[in-house]
Length: 218
Image (cartoon, rainbow, N blue to C red; front, side):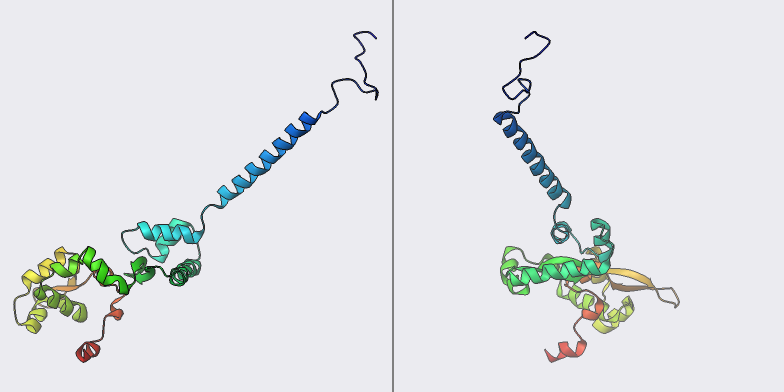
């Protein structure tokens, strides 16, 4: 048999073209690797759940995140879906006995520790805003909160003393701001509380303030 005619095996097929056991193992390994890679790719495309993403955002944010802000950050278009996810986090935290929950304060959502842990947290760090406000400033803040928009002169009538220093301190701390001017001679400034006031005191809106009659009962 010449070189022009390759050797044939007993089965009549050219030598070297029969798949060996090693060839089959290599092929099986390649198929398995491709399947694993495809599965890993699918998992990477899925990414973390929407709940986990929102939880991370709330954990990192230094201020409440509104529904609109969360929609923008997560690219979830439906506001009701955002609220459903937040409610799901609340349920998860409650059922797992977490020390925190999600609350709607200052027109947005924020992760907050539960009230029963306040004594230990106060030991770690006193609430700076409360401890640094003088009794005069706290009294002035209460009047502004309940009477806003209110003139400085009206606050002074209620307190019976000059409140210029107290108002200035509250404005500097971002708890009170000028919200307009009265339509009277001199156009005196009208004062009201800020969004930071709501956040600091754990309120979603001014309607969450304790009612005056409830305070009198105490």
